[in-house]
Image (tube, rainbow, N blue to C red; front, top):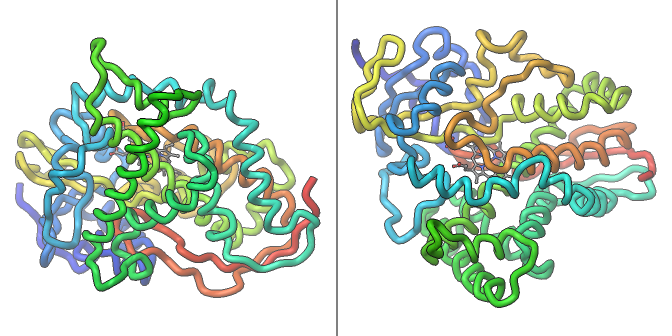
Length: 416
Ligand code: HEM
């Protein structure tokens, strides 16, 4: 068993420029799935890693949280790695047994049953935002990301957390900077991506520090009030763990859903036959949402680190090696999906890995599904005509595949 030669493709698999300029490297992933699904990649500055491109292998690794831990690193960078010792690990970086104990503390708030109680409010938030495009109907032009895709997830997350409405804009800017830290739009004063991201996290902590103090005094029916009063074995959890909870919900629930929404609309613009099919039969909405998440797969990769030697296919992953789980590749795996490169709103079954799988399966998956469903239900049936009104501007990131600006021209029917 040997480590393979470096391929040109593998060098660009996590480089942010690649995603900014060309989008997802589906050709390279398809070739890797066929020829070398577990592939050793070396980089110029960043650490070397195993690229995992098959659905079955990502599942195997994700379901072995003791052998492949998340705490060591969350993602692979194209730059030299540095440890953020002063930033507390969030849920997504915890490993067993602490991970399970912490996740269970709040998981009830994220079940479909609980969310049903909130669906009317989420519906109202979505309706207001989409009506902003043209409630009376008619023709118009906008940047769909700015107008809808970016606004909706922040509004929903901020509302779930109990953040006052006048502060939603602050949360929006900070999260942009934590995830888009590699993007020139979010860099300023000559600061590096790393510094920009860390400064934004400090701002988020400062803000939630105050909000947690306030919610301890005056608890309400919101997530920050719950985080502020979490206990394990009858003892309150450490203050920095409360901060970590706030951070993960703000960051994880934001860019991902934004990019699923904007990527989804772009997909419908590019596949108008499927848009018409959905308009004719709105009962297809749940499967359409799943297909959008499969097709777009907003998260490019997350990492794991092996704690012991592990044989995978014909390769030996050594203890200490990093692996990158490429979810968009798994979601085009020909062994799992019929016609994986065909977008079908009625695809069923659809066992995509857009929300991950196993121990760290997305806690907010039902929130994301609800947001996408509500946004599409308010918008898509009203579309008479829709097209791009300019070039699609992509985020410079090797972690989240994002559309930063999506200029569209449309003709809408009046809102019902
Ligand atoms: C379309 C939108 C979304 C996508 C594609 C997405 C994707 C993912 C993926 C792939 C993971 C797995 C990470 C891993 O295995 O290491 C994950 C975890 C997570 N997501 Fe999401 N997510 C989305 C929306 C949300 C929302 C709306 C929230 C919060 C309200 C959220 C909160 C979380 C949290 C807390 C985790 C960590 C779970 C754990 O470690 O147990 N996500 N997400």
